[in-house]
Length: 240
Image 1 (tube, rainbow, N blue to C red):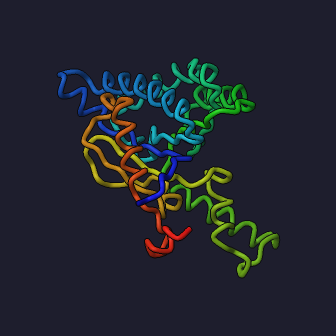
Image 2: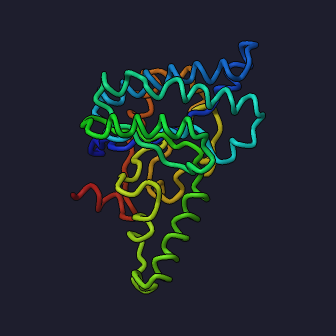
């Protein structure tokens, strides 16, 4: 019998907003608005369940190439919801990972204000992956490490996996235990590629606006029935 394992860090690829709206004969922006409501519900439930970290793939570096009107609508949605009461109501700390150079100044300012305002909250940490991609993140980490070598503060032979992790956008955040993707696609889409080396993966056909508390519990239940071996045999894990 597998021992029950808990989710300390849950990462989610929130996919399917546009297709959900299209099925209803509505513009894609309608789906994104509905998706924000799902974020509120799922974040509150995760907080209530004792999950310590929730990382949400909100906007990728590739999403900048979407139609200008959709990008503008997404920016407006983010701006409108950065002061959400969810942070105070659930004692949630707010963080952002991503390429901030591409984010409009007004949104960067509001993001930083929310980060500062929630810095002392002691409950769950909600991480927004915004203007984010793993290739961007790993490239930036390599540049940082190369600069340290150039400056003489780091020797090439001293570079370890821990060195790389410490230079990623997620430095100080534990790796995800479980990665959930909604919307029916079975790919990772340039998301947390370093960090999910040993994460469990869960894919569901449910579009993000319809991903409710029951669907969240299905994902958690699936995770808890698995055995995380990290290269060991099942017998070795069970013997602990």
